[in-house]
Length: 367
Ligand SMILES: [Zn+2]
Picture 1 (cartoon, rainbow, N blue to C red):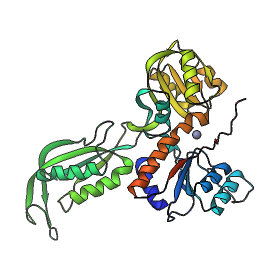
Picture 2: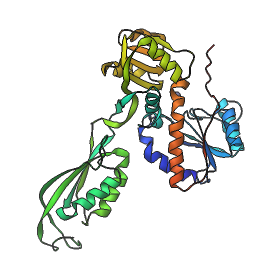
Picture 3: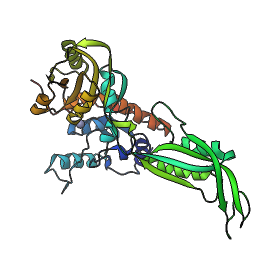
Picture 4: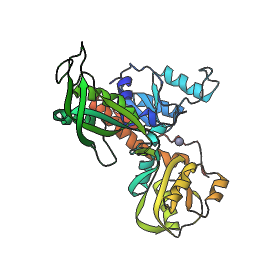
């Protein structure tokens, strides 16, 4: 499988459109047409990770944190990003980043963190706004199922735990084909009245193009009447942070101990207090901006990282705020990321292996 094919398949399930606008994701170093050998996944690109890839004969490294983020004026050893880029290029290793798009999918950073902490009934904490559209198309009654099936197969009409969702209402369509037209029903020059179905379904913005193309292919009319309307409903399929419940309530001390054990960290920082913890919000990495969402949704505790002194202070009264470390709250995604990469390679009948680096790339040490 070529890197470009992997890229297309990966973005179909972790779309670039759900990433933060200023993010730098996708192929950062390397040639898209190069065939993949083995793959190494890591949280960060470091010299040790590149050395690990060389040992594992992997010519593609997928990291969560983009190896190149700020514009580089040169690719020389004068900066750490330049040094790493040079090293990767000299070793013939491509580097790919799955950053905030990986944060925002249901199998990504936050759902992995929720799963490691044993949360159940996990939902997105802060769903993405403004990423949904409503597609309406008018279909002659006998062709409704065929058109709907084509649209569903291209990804329209999916809503949380449901798929093939649509609404159909009957009506009468009118049209007159003028000279040069070849109408599917009726004859040129006559006004036709046809029993049609108004077929509607929700669709994520980044799927609209492929859904419309599937719809037009399945639709019998020469000129198809349809509308695509942006809607402001929240897209609960994608978003940042996650919230769920522990299988049984636990005390604060037991909860903090559990977090330390599961995230394999000798210490956590925390503020506030909750005598009983049942509902827990998480946001891997820097999640301070979602603490209010967590409190508003009744979380007894929130596990995140990079909390400032005043953030601890501000939320002291509302919940138990736990800073468990940026690396520790994100590295938990690597097994899920490796699984997704494996399944993409498998669909492409690729026989290469996918490794999770054992190199600890955390620049922060706790003494
Ligand atoms: Zn991060």
